[in-house]
Image (cartoon, rainbow, N blue to C red; front, side, top):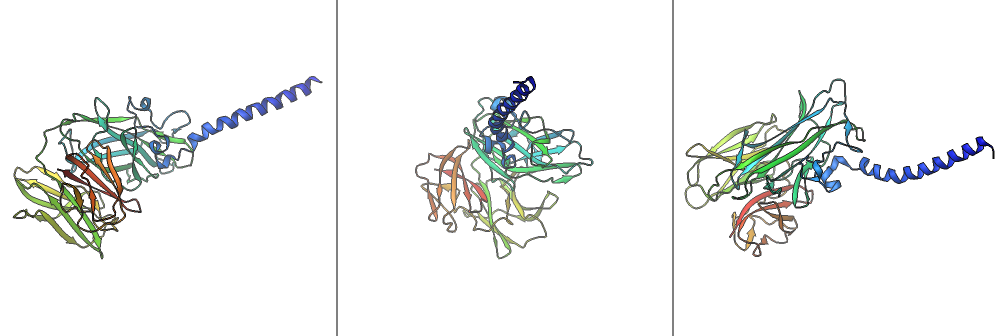
Length: 388
């Protein structure tokens, strides 16, 4: 055989061999390129990507076969825990707060407007157990459970909420864990992506975290807001099991610029009936979000959960009482809706489908729980209750 023929033959078999290896290896590489990142890294890879040093070796969505080579000069992420609009450094056990993440692209000049994604979790600072309970996931986001922890991440690529600077801000409710939990640390990482369908040209932020210390507990006091969109009228309901020292309530509506404004002041009811309701007409807002602010005689405030009645196409989930004994009873019948009950560490203790106007919880130990209801279109609403 001529030398040239030998070389050609050798190159043929070498190319074939490399092609076979490449084919096998491509499955591994394509595993990364087909992560379906828009639907969440934790949901698809079953691992945390918040950058916590003890979780998944501190991984984020940056690295080999993952997102990088960004055009945007970097991405910045900040997180904060808010009571109303005020950042807090300590939490009151059982109280609901707003957790906020902001992601910004450093430079967008003459580049595609970025899309955004993130991964976040809250754990005890020393033992790294899940801490507290996330509320209903806002649009384009989801709650993913893995290894006993609950991660808040995107379910779709998210568009910017501000163009100056180009950035995304997302907020979710978080109910603090019970007394004795200790300090809680929030971990998160965000990213700005160009949306080209691959993992190149994207920027992942450095991981960020904040530690929130435990404060003094309140007396048993559950302030829960529910409602429904009834023939283009918004019917709001809320309950409070402890109005001692309450001065008044403020019904607040969220404007399109993301600020809440007070639209009505309500005085506490006299007697044992602590169920409130109010009917409003819709405003010219993209979202119809409401909350209740309870103000005590020392001007301290407690905020309810936030509800968006534009998304409410089903009957409200208001419990007849937040104090529950053997059964959870609803004001109105809600057949065939899925429910999940979590304890204050975020662990699922019961789940199923409502087939009557109540849920049997006689098998639960006494304590504080969160009931999460989900409709067939995956919209969810949560409410805290106390099992006795």
